[in-house]
Amino acid sequence: MKEGLRKVLVIDDEASIRKLLRVSLEANGYDVVEAVNGREGLVETASQRPDLLLLDLGLPDMTGLAVLSEVRSWSQVPVIVLTVQDSDQDKISALDGGADDYVTKPFSVPELLVRMRVALRHAGQSLQEKSELISGPVRVDVPGHTVTVNGELVKLTVTEFNILKVLIKNKGKVVTHRMLLNEVWGPNSVEHTHYLRVYVGGLRKKLHVREDLPEIIATEAGVGYRLLDL
Image 1 (tube, rainbow, N blue to C red):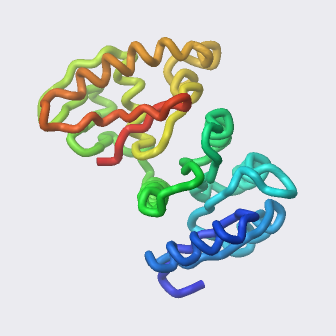
Image 2: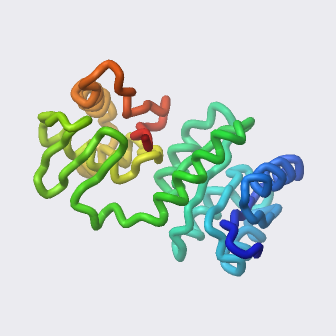
């Protein structure tokens, strides 16, 4: 490993993708290790101890989801999956299986770099231990059960507060419909996505207290929601 650099393991069977990632990531100060299939990726994850995995879901010897499942049985290393277009179910399965984020092929390198920075930053934080959670102008006082936006108190219902708490603990990451429903309403409500549309819509309006402030909750179509890491 190059001294002081974050190590990224790329698990992808396409040589052109690996080359693109190696050149792009090394130019941005990362140390890059490659694996051409799932089994090799698991060996390299165990031996190299990378700081982050870039995992293609379409591997030749085993599925990317199987690799993710095995990694998650013994490691919490940040994982960003690489998916093809129009594969919402793969994205959902990967996120529910423990992936930190996803990018869609063909992907934008600048967008990937942002996703990587967020995943690495999130991995280094212990948000669950904090009594105050912050993202840009939004501050959530967990024990006080209060929310302010740019210093202004915003009154939320219990459900809206619980949704925001889950989103802000995972700021910058996609939270799937299933994950949110399970956290807020329990496992018997994971199919009731219409609940979320109503409550997230109301939450968006309450958080958007001034026209000059950005919308902070982004919709990941067909997948879930992402609270922007402002």
